[in-house]
Image 1 (cartoon, rainbow, N blue to C red):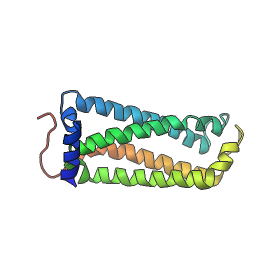
Image 2 (cartoon, one colour):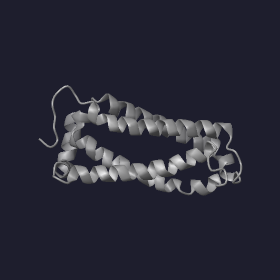
Image 3 (spheres, rainbow, N blue to C red):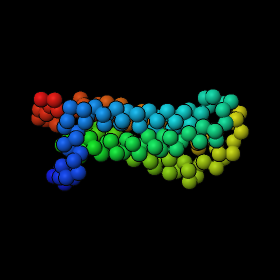
Image 4 (cartoon, rainbow, N blue to C red):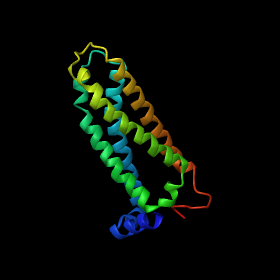
Length: 168
């Protein structure tokens, strides 16, 4: 698996770009921009479903969700650039593994939300309280994305058992 990821990265030029002076900082900045879009929009929508800002219709906030999806897509692309550039730093990293698991739970949660819960949320008026199922989905979503952020930050502190230094 490591060899395949590295071969892909080297074959596409990602590896060379990521190991330039500005490659990693540019991609990391884009990753944080994507995260801001994702958490800013999905987080706001989740907070509204949990009961904050009751004067704002949930359907109005839901119109921002495509920006969050764009942020997620940006994070997937930049995250794959990180992963394929130094796969051994990620694949064996417990923080990265937990991050992926939380992303999977968040994905299942959003699928459940749109399949079973979204209809009454979409038609609710501005002052309406979200159904209990929507609140549960929002709480799971917020918990998962907070965990993803925390684990993303912890990746740098949990290294494989050998010394590796990007700037050395």
